[in-house]
Every structure is written in C-alpha cells, then in structure tokens.
Image (tube, rainbow, N blue to C red; front, top):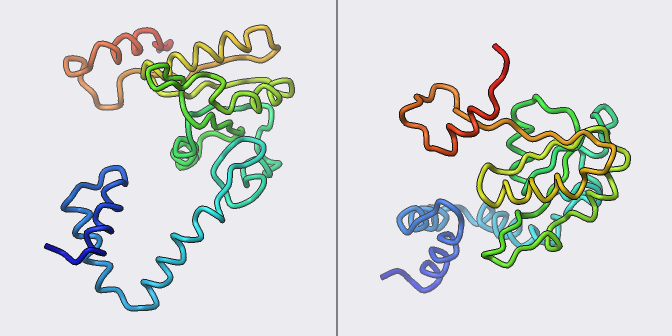
Length: 195
C-alpha cells in the first residue's frame, strides 16, 4: 500500500524494541514530512553511529572516546566496581545519582540455551581490574541468566581479596504481597534488613 522505500523503513523501525507495526508506520510517515535539512541530519547521524561509537577500553561502556568519562573521573571511587550486563544498565543507575564507583559492562549474560558462555562475555578485562579493587558489586538481573552469571563471577573471584556483594532484590516500593510472584517474594525474604 505504501511506496517501497516507506515499507522498507517501516520494517527497519520495527526492529527496534517496543516498536510495532503502527508505531513504525507513524514514525516513518512523520519523517516524510521533515524538511530536507532535518532529514539529511538524521540520515547522517545514523550513518555516523557505527563509526563514532566504541566501547571503553577499561570498563566496556558504550562511549565515543577510548576511555569513558566515568573511568576518567578521578572523583569516583576507582576501587569499587559494579558489574552490569550492558550499557543501558549503567545509564539507568547513573540517573539515580547514588553510585559513585566505576562500572564493568559484561556485554551480556551467561545463557547456555543461546550458546552464550562465560568466555563470550567481557570477563577477562574485569579479572585484570579486580586486583586493585576493594568491592565488586554484582548488579546482574534477577533472572535465571543473571543469577547464573552472578554465581559464576562469585566462584571465579572467591579467592581474591575483594568484597563481593550483590544488589538487593525484592518487593518494589508500593507493591502488595498478594500480587508479587514467588521469586520476588523469595528475594524479598532473603534480602531483608534490620528495621
């Protein structure tokens, strides 16, 4: 029903998370009404994306520099490392403005069903950073893959002179017990604190 180029763009937009047929269609049709300068700038940004973005050589965070701004910041606690699955996790934690250490991005989680093993993750670079650290905070998801990865890291570094901690998981603020799933309730009981 649409010209071929619009159909192709709709298919491209549908590859993005959370974008279905209708949203992709609406986005593409909106772009068709942009002026030439805006459209050219958008296309230029997309084509420059792959060549401009790289991973920090220290922590693996998505950046446009060899070493990201977090690793370069001398005011951050360089001896505390929070391990996360991907760069989106870092950006989410940074928005809370509550963590002032450094990060290490694994670029995924152990998932044997998808053929992702520990050797496929950014673990070697973490091993080289551990010696200078006081605390390793494992901040992987509370999923099976996240727990498997956390257990692997814990066993890998248990002999090192580093305090290994795990982010607390449990009931979200405002949640009612009767609506919580079993895993959330288990984690809430395990991670209880003195009141």
